[in-house]
Length: 105
Image: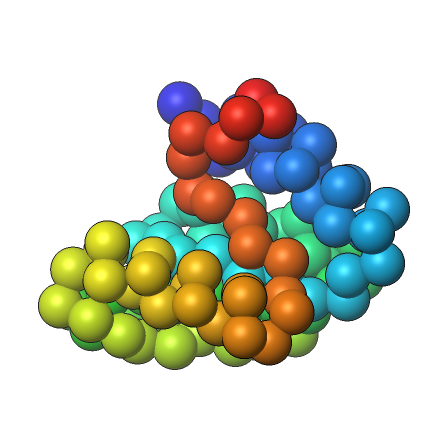
């Protein structure tokens, strides 16, 4: 799977966020999915938060951060980071973008 494929499918999902009036996205990632969310958020003029596992390299964090994108390290593995992303989406009213297996795609 290329980043272009992820970006295209992320676009389908995030267009729903724009239609519903969301101004911010949140997702979890170890790298590629976060880059896709960053790309789409910037394209749609939205901000985003990407939750990554604590073990994520600084190079990945640096690639994800900036341009309206916040990166939070949380948890020892991806599924813990993803649980945090879902929790924040619910409590803060942010549009959650799953990094894979979304029913729309």
